[in-house]
Image (cartoon, rainbow, N blue to C red; front, side):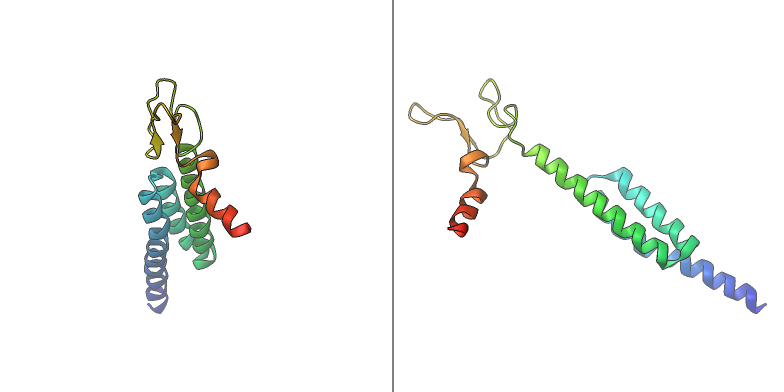
Length: 128
């Protein structure tokens, strides 16, 4: 009878720890709009908790969370890239929130990219 309670404890402990650790990539993935990776990470953490306990579920959590953050960062870079279509486009239309259409004195430009990048100006002033 004691062994039965032991295995119930192992099962319930694995479920609880797998769920708690799996919530990390699930929440991060859903916030970063990476639903497939979020759900896969949650399931892997839960399964890893049954296989090797915390020794497998924690690395799964770290790996999936890192993958979600890296891919979200990559998507953000592509979104705010320097492509002509994004900053200015061919018709002067722009999706860039920092785009200035220009005037007779100044050509159209994006305040974010190129030499007008506010972060590159800050980096240049810090390096001097």
